Length: 425
Image (spheres, one colour):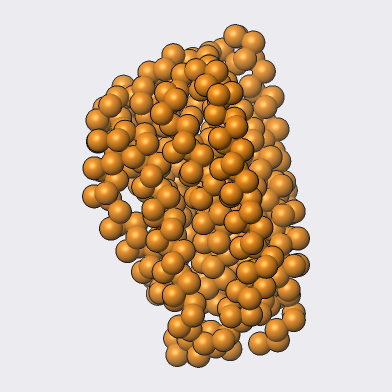
């Protein structure tokens, strides 16, 4: 593998470009959530927070991390049109079946908890539509075509802000319209794909291919699952232990963390597609020490110092949002420590996955995710919101340390691993 085909500087530049699209979409979502918090009563917003977090979790279950095996396989020979069409049609067909099953399960689980029949039906349908759209967008990315996904993010963000106008003006301020405003724009994923790629075909999947792709996908999904588990379980545990009101508080308290993390989403988006063109792990790590680790450390310390001076000013903002002041420092530490850890995790995981090292990374993330559940239960029960936030920091730190250890043990370019597992040169 040539060391200079795609540099870390190029990776950062392209990642920042893609992150802007993700950040725009996420910013519109955060604005919508704040508007919902200020307009709906606290318990009703708690119902929204419960449903939307479960919705995201179920949509992820259909897609797992299909981007990893899809992009990895397509990028090995991006000009093979026959394989491209065959794989895309089979995976799309399977995702429709799985998505339908998940929609039914979502309906049966959330309806008894919330008693919101119309809202739950709407979300169940959107799980199928949104999750399948996310999957088919992985295929053009395997050919390094990022435009369909970028345009879809713009469409989602623009539609949200337009639909938010009548909500803020007081024309519609109920839970169903809030959910329609937040989730409906996800159809922009389908609109952009159909425009750029055309109508996808369906085909009965081959069991062997399906098993292979979904096995890699499930293992890869342990990474985003590791990021989702503290949030989703936090909402569930806080709802069970302390009520919908506290779950809603937790959802709003995490906005700064998600907002900053969204600024760096493009890292994993691009890294997995470019992993084979990047230098060896040791060379990449040496570059990151100066180009990434040092700036992240300086920013983290600066953020903590600034938080001391802004502590008094934060009180009125927290009061406006209905949040207890006790969440201030846990949120500060999550942003100052959790976000830098998440950036490093995005680079490492995507780099390893792009080289085909899917299973080892999945095992690492799985150990951290599953092993953290008892801790999350105890912290959620005794420390409420602050405890769940603390568990998020601990999980991120553990994942970084284990990934560093794994990277140091591997060869310079992962070629030995790939050949040993029949992944080609």
